[in-house]
Image 1 (cartoon, rainbow, N blue to C red):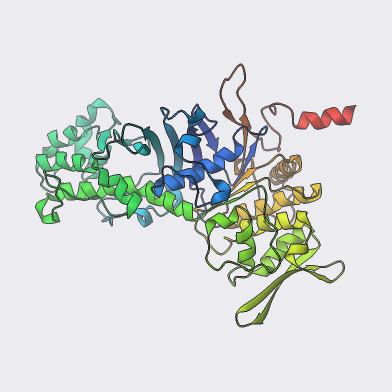
Image 2 (cartoon, rainbow, N blue to C red):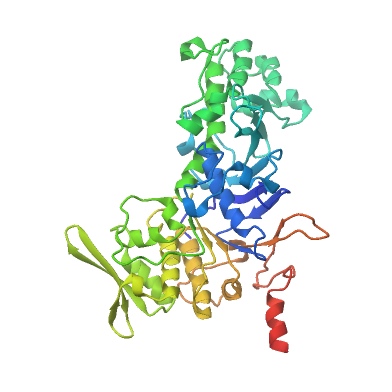
Length: 512
């Protein structure tokens, strides 16, 4: 695994998004597998990530998506809210490991050394409601929840009239904070105090703080709730505006020093996850279940477009670019024993030819003439490795049924490709699959890692590097779609029994 690598997003939470009526947690790992019967919500989890990215970009009524184009058409809020009931609130949350990123890269204001940001984790949740009381019916962000280290908790809420955001700080430390005030000598205290009044009442004990006026401090917290605080980021990433009592923007000199610092600090706290999700959106790609076979005389698209990964065309585009080492692609193809190499040949200054070489027969095969299985697996391979030279840990590759149309042996070997890319290059995978061969190979690698029997130079892969999420449809005991984490021990065995068959079905057929 790359030095210093940590997974940024640890858990995803969904509520009232498509089939998920009750809040469910999806635990993420370097390799996350989504299992379950058909039409239970496996693809929904991938779509929810894409929708969150759309929300952060200001597209709350998303139909066409940046990650799938027309092929991943969500149909708008009315189509994705649970049971198409617009009175319900869609909630999408993330557990974010702040130690996995350089947080200052996502700040709008530079932090001075005096005010250190030392929070380690963040729970972030967006709530989307539907306003049907206006002439134009539209979804809107009704609440955004922030929880830093279970210490600093606040939220922004809106009633849907788009004129005002309300700021609310939740209680986060004991009532006896007065006894410990003298231990704080910077504005960090303000971020961890139970309420703003505590800070104001104990001003005499905070000698290291600059002077301030009570009205300015209170006003800063009111200003943070202004609509522009959140929607500025949705539109153009502008920092939180500083306003006078009439809502007009004013110069820094007109505000108290403490008020200015508070504004900057809360602006950073508010915008950090929003900017982070934007970056994740740029590095999130979904490979759909049916990848297009390149047409005859295929012309690659020079403009990079995330949505082309969904039908696989972006993979073929990438083959024509200079930043994708063909040797790396062929290494993975050889590991899968596909019997082909990809050849790229410069015909002239502005013309490149890409074809497959049948190594068994030494025959040139054009992409449009290759077998269906090979055409389906090549986009999976390239999507998995096109990050190799990029050590930005905000990336994620989501793949729907990578095992389609390929031989069982290749399904097993494909698991090794995912392990290598995840553990050696820091590419986390979110994989929807029905493949027994895929999971069995992953379990084998966990067992070999624990016993010390891994092949030479193969990366270690432990139980903590795999997350198996089983999506169960509603039943009599649980009348709603739910997600179960199927834990694996160090020996590569499941701790909980597998729900609803799967391995048992094989055993039944073998025993007859």
